[in-house]
Length: 184
Image (tube, rainbow, N blue to C red; front, top):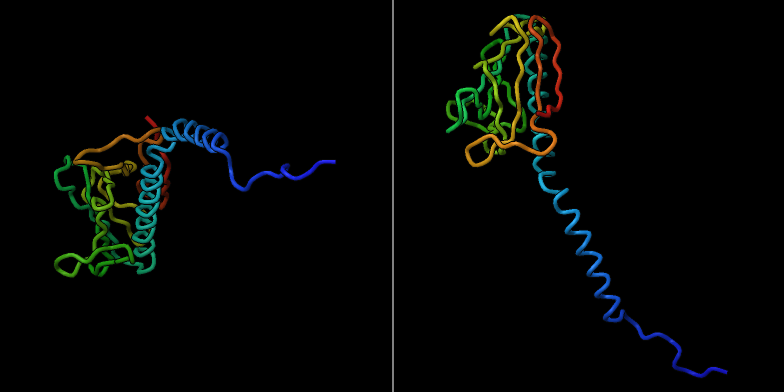
């Protein structure tokens, strides 16, 4: 017959705690490089999709009014290259500002979406895009327009892991638009 002393004391032993800490540190060291850049990639994808939605809003505004053109004007990036855009504003056919909840009020009563404050740069060769009353892209060329949403850090475009940037392709003389990730 056994008598007392066979029950285990409450809590963990020092060896169990050390083994657990060793396993957790190995997992952390192995997983940390995989997590680097994940937040930046997620932010860039989110901002790219918001830009795409705003393009759809401008096109739909032109369709709704049924006359004239709706315009998205791109704003230069402070300290950036000639094609780097730091934001945009949207104008309806009547010349009034179209705004969404994510836009910032700027001088003159216009509303703009400032991408630079969110570490995103929009690369666009065109200064503005116009959509006609049928929702088709007008000007600046007869070819498709491709906008690139890139991560912007410390005054320069920054390359991210697998997905370098997001592209928005707008077909000329068409209402067709697409958004997709691009790897280089």
